[in-house]
Image (cartoon, rainbow, N blue to C red; front, side, top):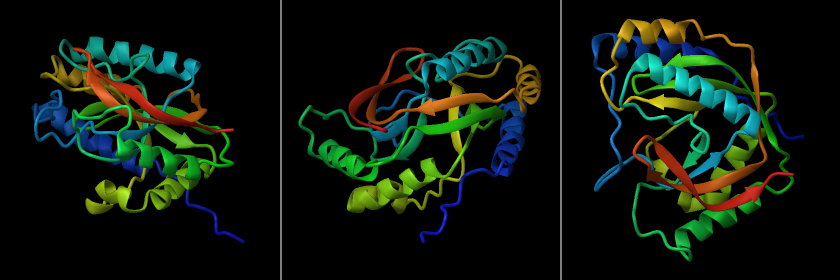
Length: 234
């Protein structure tokens, strides 16, 4: 019998992130997002899970509230149409992605292999945390299906798993960033307190019915995922 896949159910990483994020926001050393350009290492093609409409609406409301507290100039990553959980980053940003892109075709084929027989994925969003770059919604999987799919996809990618394998990234949480810092925080203490008051929320159920291969476009207020391929979970 196959051994159960460990689920990402440990809340301690979110606690550590809050301590790091609160310190960075308090002293103004938090990171500032900029749109990807030449040499960027963030916002490349990725495999994403999109929240169902109900969860997406709840996250969008939290994102709008966070933006009011944080002040002007930040990215509404949790807005409707932007919200996502990243399952795996696949490459660094590039602008030459065409409809017949061979890399995307391989990513999509590996995804179709890994997702065979995988049902829709379920999470509970149990609260918010701060990071040195963002306000983040904390998600816990209700079972081991998301982590099994993530591991199966890494195996199916083979050499195309190079990015996260190469930097030794070990994903130990599921999360959705709802606000990325793209300017100084207007009132650091107000934001820290606002997030602290929402570390525990009435759980928001989230269901993902497909996995999407996406690239990104900067809209002026956020990075928006643009679908390149997808596999339906059923």
